[in-house]
Image (cartoon, rainbow over all chains, first blue to last red; front, side, top):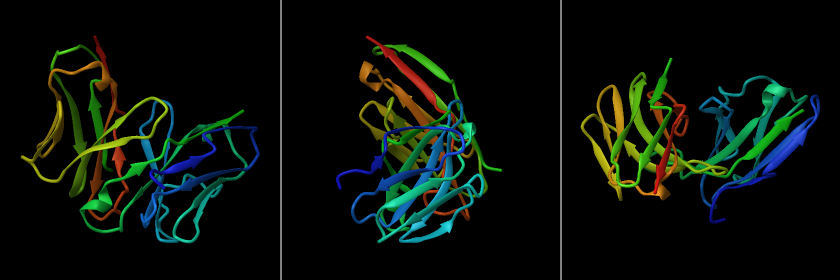
Length: 117
Length: 112
């Protein structure tokens, strides 16, 4: 696609429910990233995919968070048993191949705003 | 631990009034300093990458500079459409490409 597409744009859920957030990266971008942006905090790295593999999961805050990527394209971020502190905007970004100058330039989607009641 | 601090938190300018935003950083082995612009309800949009002290990049009314401890984003004769949140981020040595540490941002408002 022309840009990074994320869905849903808004999600309201009850505490304890599971949620899935989807990211469709730019066609041909092999690297994909998930970030979280909370009120009053900067963007926080969650996980990095190169192809379908996740060489860096160091930012996932707990084992309630997981992500997968299939076909080297679409990625899903799953949050199980949501808590109120999970409320944030979840941003997905993609970049060209994982090495070289271009790999540092991330193109972000508009984000999925998650509200946990 | 890598840290990025941006100042001021918010900046209000009149159209045409030039100013600078600051980004101070502490990082082990800088592998790039990045400036992004974020409009409300949208994801950050890439502006510049700087790699070494003394480097400068320009785009329209924006100019980014880098020293060993900080970066400045200079805005010359700003227009209302330059209003946005400006984010600074760094990539540390030994980290994955795209694993960036972001500052809190500077909210810029330019009044006509």
